[in-house]
Image (tube, rainbow, N blue to C red; front, side):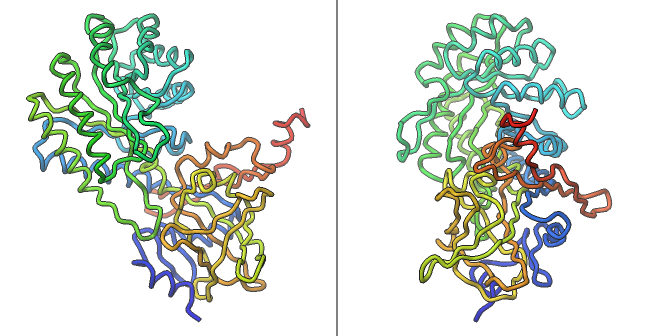
Length: 464
């Protein structure tokens, strides 16, 4: 019977830039995963920090090339969307690349202050403050502005938000507006709940910003849930947005920037086809064409990439505890953790990640389903995006089988309740960071051990 490695090599263009097999074991970005497993055990979360920097540099390269090739007179500004992962090691790695940040809630702002105190950002760093804001959030934003963070830009999400800044801000400041985009036809509603209606944009500017010496309208913000995709829907919404920028720019000379939120996709399959360079070029070309037609200066282009920045840096490794044949043809591999707690997007959004065996690539393979250890019927993974089924090496006695899910670095920790109470009290797994030292050698450090029972019992009130 064919081996697992034969199946993968026949199905995909394998090995890839990120994955290769040496001596029957999988390497991820040149990291021998079995060495990490043998050192730390499973279940295990892994963050490969150099990937964050390489993703940022990739986006900068493509957008700057598009600006040069199209003789575009505005600048490109890369912002990291912090909600994708708030971890200190993620922010500090990303900020090595001369970028800016976008926030979404009140407690982002204390993180901004800590980053400033550590010298990771300056008061010139753009802090784009998005979201529908509670009073605590508007207070924190106002504090930043009053402390001299001149590029802290609150993005107005409703008609009344500006009143809070009028009351709390003592220094003149920039503001932005988020425009409410129409959603894709498959959504249960037509227009995003977030942002300001297109018809209200100009009246809001005229009534509360134009003649107020505290404010300058610097930015319009645009966000598409499904991200930057080469679809009629995306280009239609982007064009509509740029036309509104042109309309407003004619009466508002301070308006010089747009933030085109909704990021680039990440690889969710070994076979992945997305032309980043083409998309950057077409975005820049579209903005320039519409501005030229309307005879207004082109804006600076901000993007806020979250998943694209951090997603491909992450992996989760599990051991297969055993198998169960539940009828004549359904074989279940039971892992030593839970998808609900460690990869909540798998069951919450039916998200697909890259799934590969970590060892035993020379063994024959089986078609299987993968089950988590909770008692929840939804704690399973049984179909890959590229095959509509899962194949893994056959289990062998006295030989452990390790499997890995890859490109899991965005959102999973926050959605799963990192460090808190997990479903069925399944503990949060160990978390290991991998970096490169100045000599190009890999180093691994334990960021967090597996959650222990005493932490859970204390949270639940059983221990003081």
